[in-house]
Image (cartoon, rainbow, N blue to C red; front, side, top):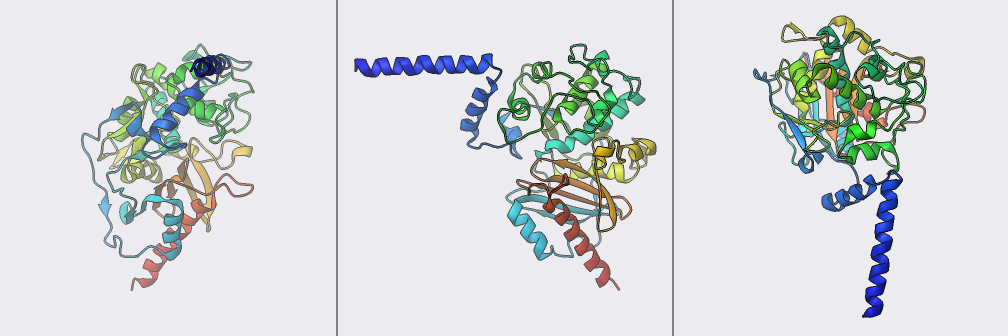
Length: 390
């Protein structure tokens, strides 16, 4: 018994030392991450994480507006290839909106039209557009205003040079490596931290801003902090006032917080809504910033936001991913594990897909084969309808 007690004391002492070293080295978040893995029974971020974390509620619109339902709603069945895509990658929602009417709609795995799911990085597009609104209201002078005017604690060789516009275009120069799989990198740390502002204060502006595109969740998190400082409102309140309310969102949404006590949104991800309401923001940009007759964003901003900003980032604008496929121009909101809201402006079509999984990126590009597959099969269905119409 004495030997057992001695052994347990040694193990306990070693464990205390190990935990102390984790915190001293800056990896203390791994302990919380491990505890959360045990609690949730899974090792990756998920669609319904909001159930297990603190959130800020975002009430539905005061004047909620239902989508119009197309006269040919669900008349054309999903193609066999589309069915396989849904099955293989665990789709939970798939919408095709044609001429501002829901033309095709399917839900899977117990989800339905009111089910909330994690936006992941789709919300980056909404945060970027919130900067435009803050500039129009006079809270921010211009895209050239220095971010340090709002976040004086920014550090690094180029902290004084970085502008709010650099944050919106992913050209901030932040010392940030986007990596969802390596638990020792910054992305998992920010996902689990209970004080995201404190974490952001440790990350320097290492490279000269405004020179090249580098996709970084940290840039959007800093932009959100800028907007909160500039307006005195939380990013949740801003997004509701700027977009969710005038867009007529029919369901309450929420945004995950770092903690109940501090209440700062994980604004590079973790906005939670449903497929129909995500589609509203895509529809706003499809219609040049107009919704239900109201000009919420200027046509000039919509044009700039959906144009490349850097030669090395010719597939990215202000929060929008850009491209062309099947001879059709598109721009899209995109999130981890295959959250997509894809706009084909010339064809007057929106495709929304939400789900648990996606394929890896194709060689030499920043998108996956399933991303293109959803487009191809949606247009195959639309072509079938056109061919069948007398």
